[in-house]
Length: 186
Image (cartoon, rainbow, N blue to C red):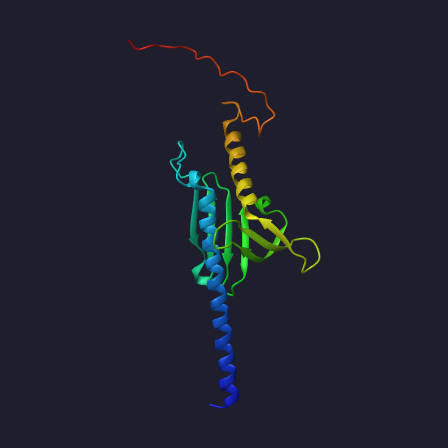
């Protein structure tokens, strides 16, 4: 085999190994995010919804293995989701339901979670603005917005059946309706 051919294969293998190493390091960061989110949402993860029996919050690992993607998903029982991914090339990605949770996040450059789990941040390029400009998003704020969104959704499901929290509603609370009949057991 000619030397030039051997060198070419060697460069390919080295580049692919670098990709694997970057992807593994970023997956470790997502694992730390999972631990960070668990530490912030312990009460929600261990509490079940009395209506559906589901946990109020869940954190799962997954992804599209066929495409080489790894994902960490933080989800709340009513459908709010934050999904952080690492693709086969080691690039980060993020999406949320509803999309407004991430605001102007375009391309995710880095996810930062120190070993002590003291904070979790996402460095990103905004959707609008000059290419290469970067901003930082505190993922604690995203988690807080997720919980607030879930509270609003659940309160909206109540309609007029029960009074709302004073922090999320402008409607005055009315006294509960009197029962049409009552009975007692002796």
